[in-house]
Length: 360
Figure 1 (tube, one colour):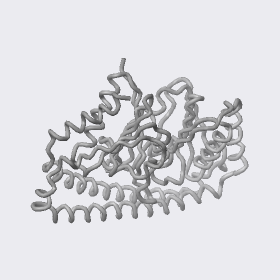
Figure 2: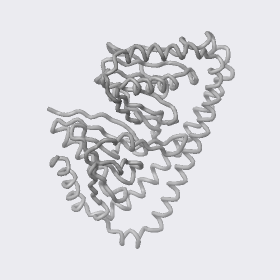
Figure 3: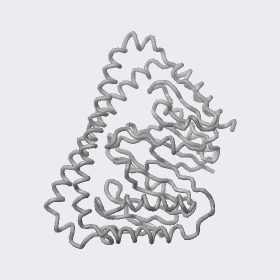
Figure 4: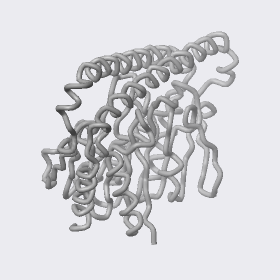
């Protein structure tokens, strides 16, 4: 019997810079294996190989993807074993001060650093400067897009009935949390998606596939979607319900989804760039525009909204292009280390990694 895999991000390319949620995502583990060494030395491949092995053994796993190379893995948690593995270079903010046993595997042992320094050291340094510059331009452009988005929200906020929005949130909380479980809640902060060189990528369908109920929040910028999710997250914690709290991959100060495992329920912002529609029993729509906005707001302010939408879209395209440049520089740096790596030693390290999970 094969196991199951849930897909996440815990690192984001955002309007507020690089943002990491590994401190929360990896809380409470019994063991954490850190893969050290430069990129291009097989760390992501080792995590991917381990994932296949664990799934073949029937284990449930959590996979954490790279936002710059979204097909690559930065980290993994074997849920039932309560063990994690992470690329120490990519996963900032890991909870290393907790009681988890720490195991370190140094993939840098397999690298011929002398050969790199002699032949390509200066080229790598130049590429790293270009990589930092591309990221800086991407983050700066995302920040410009956020300022435009804030102006877009203001148009709708002026037409919003905040009492109705508060009432919607309170009614939902009363319905969802009517029977508190009588325990302390476990709250994890994560991303379901990320801004990548390919545009926005999300794993909503994977993360909600096994749930009984999904609430699709529709609306406009500024119609209270994130504010309602923040209210529900606080209410869940106060009531003792565990929650996965998903931050917006564009603005991590906002929330885009909550999953309540004990209730087998998700509620999420189902608007672009992660717009979905009900397609199975248990799916319902909650339209915040209809519930909280003055009728005709779209039409009344169309001449203001459309230019803002276009400017926002253009800035997002520009930022994505800068991420594409960063991806190219990152890949070129990796190539140098890959060429200088002894992969017979890497295979030995891969075997050691797998033993850390088999022994447990």
